[in-house]
Structures are given as structure tokens and as C-alpha cells.
Length: 143
Image (cartoon, rainbow, N blue to C red; front, top):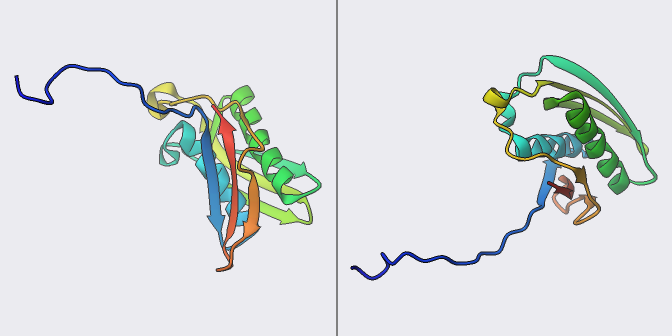
């Protein structure tokens, strides 16, 4: 038997949660991309047709909490209306977000959902403009 062909098992590190990060030229665009990253945790966003429209409004004392509220509003709609979203139009003024999300009902055959996202967390939570004028909106989601 050749060396290396020996059946074996091993432990490997595994983190159950997943970080989502949106990057854009504006804060609103970073929030849109973070939402797309959220969908990508579950399925390939390109498999989700933007057939149905949902409107969202969130308000929070700062940008970080606004991001968590926005992602949790999407997660709530995904869980309770059984929807997936693939297109987003976000407007942010002061600490108020208005958004339209387009998507379709979950189709297990078509979308093959990998996991169910339970919620956005305060872990690694950050909304900031970088030195090269890009906006980053990120946090860890509980799956």
C-alpha cells in the first residue's frame, strides 16, 4: 500500500457563522451589496428572478445598527414569506433606510438553499468609508 493511501480521519476547524460584506462607492450601494451577500449565503443570487417587489423601511441611531436592522428585515421576509431576493435599491438619509427588494418565492429544486439564516449579529459589525473612498458594510450572520 502506498504511503498516503491509508484511510484516516481528522478534525478540522469549523465556524458555523458566516460574515457578509458589501462594498460600494456609496453607503447605500454597500448596503445593497451586503444584502446580495446575504442571499449568496443561501443560494446563488443569479438563480433568483426579481419577479416580486417588497418595500422596507428601517431607522436606527447609527449606521451599524441600521445595517443589522436592514439585514434582519430581509431575513424576516425570507423566513416568513419564503422569499429570496436578488436585486436591491437602497436609499439612506440620516439614519433612515428606504429600500425596494426584488425576488421570488423559494423553490427548493431551483434554488437548492444551503442554509437558513437566523439573524444578523453585532459580531464584526462595521460600516465605514475606507481611505480610497469605498464604503464597507459588514457583519456576521447566524446560520
